[in-house]
Length: 391
Image 1: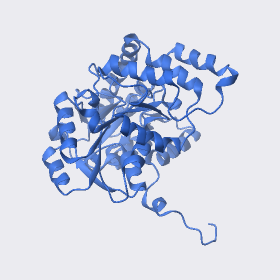
Image 2: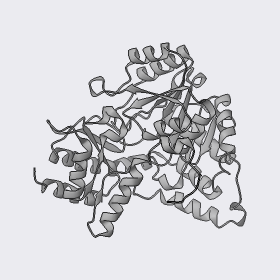
Image 3: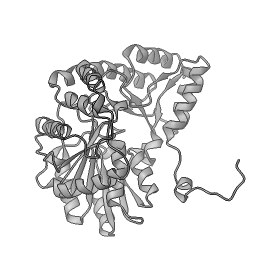
């Protein structure tokens, strides 16, 4: 330890390291020891983007003028492609000049949006269970984090009576929403989106819908912005990470009304220097892919989902077959409640990495999550290992 009088910012002591970072170090150590762990944990697609997308990247990268800084708002052609994509898939009109902004991944967008709207002490509604970054970023900014319940008995949908009680106390600035939901796989219908928009307008709360999973094993992609008047109060994040196998490319977007997007752009312009132009030009190609791309993508995930369900059953877990998205969410066997101990046993006895539900919030305890981001052959290896575990 360095002996001096320097201490970190208070926020360093108030947040924990991202759970996956530590766990992936453990998995890496086990693999280095030759234990050959099958990873069904992280939701990072393992397959290639479309060949024409990769070719567009390479072709653009060969141009000598494409390696300099770009502006935070991205090239106009990319914003136009994002606008076309929203119209074609969600029937949502976006002005490419003012209502959509490229991001270096939607995870970064959580920070940009929070910086643009949240002051220290403002209340931020985060789902429980839900994506850990909503809580982590809010805590970094000194927000008052208010978890709202998502429960199995309610289909993992918000309890609006609870939300009204929270809102009636005042000072709620932002609400994070995510459907198809991660980690539960629950899908929202139009009625829920209408209620969310009405709730936001009634209380002056910005509703932020994080929407990266709408094309995965889902025949009905939906956008919160399709609700009339939603742009007045709502923001939507989207991403090419899951829908186009481009997670490492870091290509996302934020969409809303011009004023909201302008505030986010102001934050973003002070944080990054734009995206690599060849990545943006390749993203245009990806966004213009036809329906056959999504059909082929989901054919692969459908095959993997079948094996994931068998793994759940071999573990004695139950699950809702109606869930959508990149994961399978399951309830632990009767009489078992500690998800961390359960998944650690699977890791060390079967050499299979799955995720305990507690990391997503207190309402996630008693559940586990299996990622579909591993080839069927490896998932079948995991299945056989799980079957051989001592019960």
